[in-house]
Amino acid sequence: MSEYNTGRNKEAAPLEAAFNELLKAYRLEDKFKEKQLISFWGEIVGKTISDRTTAVFIREKKLFVKLSSGPVKKELMLNRSKVLTLIEEKVGKGVVEDLVCL
Image 1 (spheres, rainbow, N blue to C red):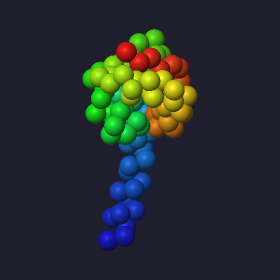
Image 2 (image 1 turned 180 degrees about the horizontal axis):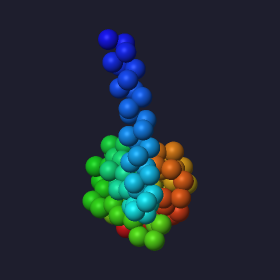
Image 3 (image 1 turned 90 degrees about the horizontal axis):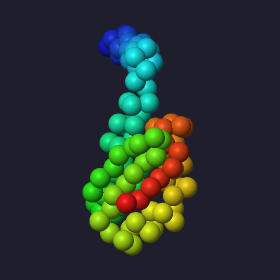
Image 4 (image 1 turned 180 degrees about the vertical axis):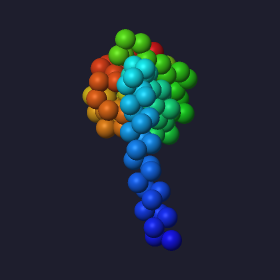
């Protein structure tokens, strides 16, 4: 049984590497990371902000977030650098350089 698990773990790393190589070959790394960021938005900022977010999109390395609450928007802008740090930790450096609240 342990041999089966060991073999399976060895297969996972090459598959991930192959996927990453494919993203590089087709120059899709940035787009993939952008999509990851958008899907992880709720995890990154938490339920309160996530529930009041009506739209999230990325243009020219800027993350645009549309919020339905003025106070939450103000709070997010005050904590912009912290949010950008959390984004870097989750999806990597260089995906977005700024945060814009709408």
